[in-house]
Image (cartoon, rainbow, N blue to C red; front, side, top):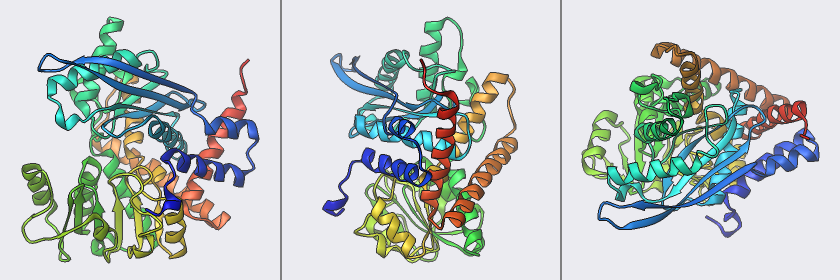
Length: 418
């Protein structure tokens, strides 16, 4: 990454919100509120490890804006997560919820740890203690956590149980992304990847491209990337490359996705999958293909490599995978980008559906969940596309304009107390 682009994730996110506020001529009182998170909790707490020692972990829970409803956002377990990154991701959640018109505000939680180096019992003790610490903020009508990087349905089950024990009765609505046995929704585990597939399909239609003949390169091999890869393959796409943190596997004739994912599960990496060439993550971004899915980590497409992207369409399955300068280069080069705050909202949307099902104690069939996801994402995509045409701008700017407009309308309607 060039030295001029070494901007913090938080500054990048705030600059996108600022740009949308500028274009919409948002009043200063609302603009200032959107630049800051409303509430932040930092907890340093002890956890007993399996060997009997005690370690101190640091965790965060940040609420960005609750003008449109309860705060919503995942919990990340990662050794490199910071408070500023958590703030940025919370702000992104506010934008995501507003773009797809789900009545939530944005939040995000995190613990600085490496879950890959911890046992299941250590993770349980870590999670339950963290749940106690953030119980000051979370609740079914105030702030509803969900899984994110390094966490999963089991993590949510522990949080739900810990919160419920303190209240004296079961409260499934306090988290989403739970196991189905305790109130989770069908389709939730694959939701973000499913949303990426829908986004790719909608973008392909704009480029007069059939998915049945489309070639796809996917950066990432986690839950989002794996789910998207399976669903794109079922749509007829030829997945020519897939990568993880160690590198990638490439075959221009296409990959057997199920076999590749099984190979990764067995070996820990996609590298060395039979019949493929080993490539770097940088190589993958520059492959000739119809669709490039950025579903790994932040700031992968930068000013240094954006011009090398040969894909017609970029779908952002990760949070902020493209820097602002890179975004402009892609737009100038005619690449159709479905931004993260639109493409990666599948998990948020089905989390909302799960919350609604829990409130009603009435559970939907998987086809109902998926049909509703398709409808909400299609509606949001269409609205963003209309703004791009009216304002002669890119999809990212249009999505932020739509999101900011909705949040500002809610803030203005509610006013300032007292």
